[in-house]
Length: 230
Length: 230
Image (tube, rainbow over all chains, first blue to last red; front, side, top):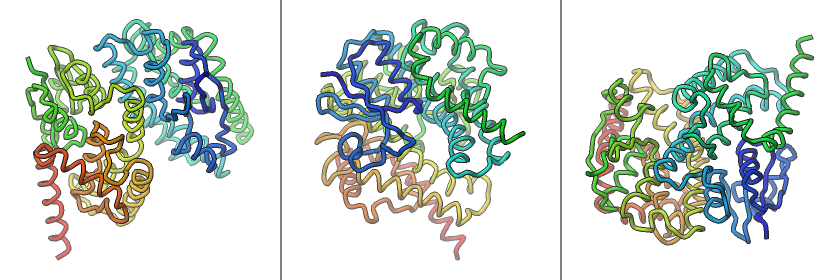
């Protein structure tokens, strides 16, 4: 019986898990949960899938689990998974862990806030985006990506060592969220750019499959912006 | 050679790791880093201890690592540690992992923000705390602790199962940060309170040792507040 995977590809951690499942050939049953229709907010979803009303979530033979990184670690223990995603070597594993913790208050926080405040909230409230909020979000995100460039990205290498790990997948999906909305994460960051392209090239064809929905939303957002500036 | 542990007991994750090291009898060399004197901000600290200029950090035979949860996992692999802190049982471990991820954007975020905005920032900038900011911080923290009560705290049990895990230590240290500043986390939350007392009682005498500095700061904060209201 394959593991049930509840996800929406508009969510960054869902895309990371999707690529991990596909690339590792873990048998799974995909269950799409439309966040935009509020499918995760129903009592049924809360009682049967995830009490926190969020995606991603899994159900493996009745065992329910949420939180992308916890799900990733569980799958590494329970399924046949190539070692490079989460190395058995203790020091390499510790470095992957260090990134997985670091990202919460850094790339994850600021990239998600950028998306939320400059695109999502103005769209659902139908209020124009204030220049102040845009500037503040951009400034925080830029500072955070400078830290990423300085401390994690290295020319033509993955975040940890010479092999791709789950840290790379989470990072690229977070950075994509503002990127597809029109923000340029590469300006003045050649190491981040070379790392980004390396990860993308390593994930053919899963990266494109995972990114198709957020790419569509990004195109619509840019078209709406161009329209409003006519 | 014992592992070098860089910490300041005013920091929540440092207190959690301190209790874990002491209770597990892991041999370590304590190195106090005075955050209030900015000892973590020097070039020397950045180059020799932790490139992210934060505590906690460790150095184990030359291997440097930061991020409390990554450090905890590393120590579990490398040292002799009782199983209950991070169970080998895969499902129990997954549930501990789920909490360790969940807490970042919940208890950790809101308890730390409460401390930062209602106590730390007004103190270092010498500006009075605005009622608006206090109300907003209280409201966010209350909502977050309601979620904690509903989803994690259970009458007379630990967060995961019937044994104490690292999740309990991180949680109690985060909740203590606003608590010692005068915020009551127990009001209307009997399950949270019984969980809290269970953890505290399980950690004699390490809880009191770990908490002495934050207790002192809390007393000073309350005295200053009383003085300003005379």
